[in-house]
Length: 291
Length: 165
Image (cartoon, rainbow over all chains, first blue to last red; front, side, top):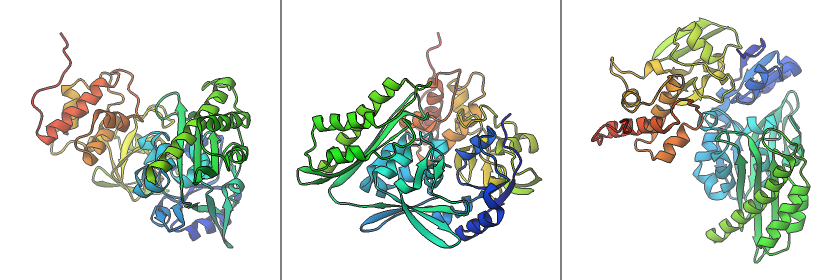
């Protein structure tokens, strides 16, 4: 039987309350949102905490997708299912719908949250690549107030983020830029599994050429949620099959997969290249459809 | 710590440890052993119950987290001694063999039909994709859910069973 080691359970009733609890209880306190990453790790004794602060009551405060003229704001407690079912996200940022369809399974998606996924910072987790591709920023609340960091600053490496011991992630902000779209591609071994490799891409056109493009990979190493070299190669050039292949080759070079039960290094590099090309192609096709 | 929640319409209060999982609370503290305890790792879905009307994997929810909320288990499916149409569908269409996955399948399927009374086969397969059955190959489970959907819509014309001859 797998159960977590003993801890004291606390329930936060507001963001301020959660932050005060974190401050009072110290570094052995952890926040639990959906719990579908943290509780399995606690069962395996990979994570130990003396206090667990349940923030599910904050869904009322932090469960939202708000569309503004130049950005979309997503509350950290928004559950995967809500992201999947959001018509606003499907319209403006279809990468979310692509990704959420294949994140875990419907029951897990009923509980898991975007904030929990990002804070877990699992290198195989899909939403970090999604948010990095979209040039998202993260709002972090502490006792002293709020600060906003880019995804590059937020994601510090596997299981490590910019969120401090007495802070919590409250919101993800995604800029809306014209003439762009996005897509997500994932290869898994079976329904609900972690990715063998997954890839998110966002691309913006200026007439016939690429104004900007961003690609992020999951499950192929510690620092692949954004690959700036791909962006540099794509900017200023017209989209084409050859260019997608070139971008894929760069993505494959810049990842560091390991051989495991999900596949060999060679297979994962092949997927990194192939999925990068597919995601870019699909994102560009979507721009065409909307204009 | 003390936890109070509503389980199948009845409010229950128990003294528990913070680390107690909802599946063990239901089975060991309330004696509701219809909810099965399978993989422990939120993969198999045998432990699926409803939390505030949505199916969740109760091995990955703390009992404390369910405090103040509404839980429904497979024991809560029947109404006034009548089996739920899904339970009848599983009987009619051979939706189970060993029965281990059945309570979770039933709870997920009930949530699906409540939201989408006429699901397509891909929609059914997607809805149960978080659950593992090692007996049926899923085909008869899908048929069982289709049977229940047709029964509830009043469009069922004959019992849909494989030719077993």
